[in-house]
Length: 431
Image 1 (cartoon, helix red, strand yellow):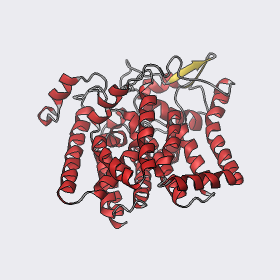
Image 2: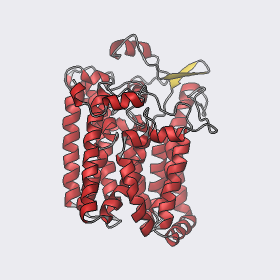
Image 3: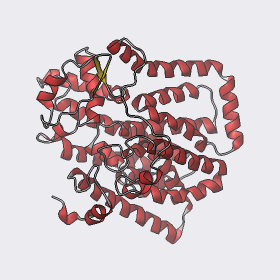
Image 4: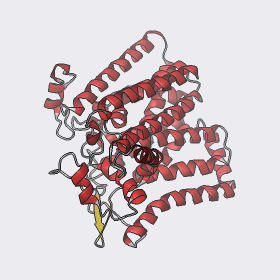
């Protein structure tokens, strides 16, 4: 795994340099926690520093820290006359270790120790990097179980960090939940794969605990559980794994307790904030199951997955070697992707507001990386060189478009066909 280790160190170095350049100088850090990211982070100063689940200091905090006082985003919802955080607290939980380190630093250096100043924002950025690195390590270990060469794994990791909108959500918008969900999804796939190859009961609590965390970050992420059939090579493996799970009552109980404890953190917050255990904080927002925007999610110039993250389309070449290896796994991959796309495209706001590309697929990029690695592993000679060349070209395109998105040449919501092609890799228009 020497190539993979060097790849991870290289990825870490590039991410640190990029983050420092974009976010840490001058007043640039003030733009990191915007919109949803602000709501995710708000749990930490409110609960750990102010001990106030109802965000009584919201107005005062926003007057001090908002980048534009005339465009303040209210991340709160009102339930029975009491304010609560609209978002789930999983992202804040994963940010918490470095948040506490930043708080200690702020206290020691005399910086503003209110949870919103520069040390805390840098900690958010570092947290996103840390979880992506954890995810990449797990993804590398998963790919190695398929017999994929070390150098191929290293190249796959490089392409999926820098050739997808994951890079945007590590460096440009690290306060969003997607980098954390990516890391957790990679962890779940690794534990699931190891269980498929060697079904040991003690892996079940780990699997259920990780499932609890990824649901706590974004509830719809619980769908990842349905992706686990992909990591089984044969029906016999799946049957054995299911049989051992059913016999491992004590381990399932432990796992269920861990899962419920993690999910109970959200319910406990609701109870403390409103007096009720169960709250729906999204108001009238919800899913329109009879009106999914399937083709828009995949192909639209507004946010289409294959338009703004075309390396995922290239990765689909890996379905053939996966089919040759395991028809059941290939069918499970296709079935899960279709189900996932249906669910995600049924949300009332199918383009998911301000974002670069279809941000809700970021957590599931490990599934595309698996196909990418299998495709590259199976290719030889000229086809392999063509595949690598296309992948590198798409990495360059992604980096240009990420830069364009930072300066709104690629707009966060209003893209259409004409505007897309007018701006396509127009580096001459960049500042």
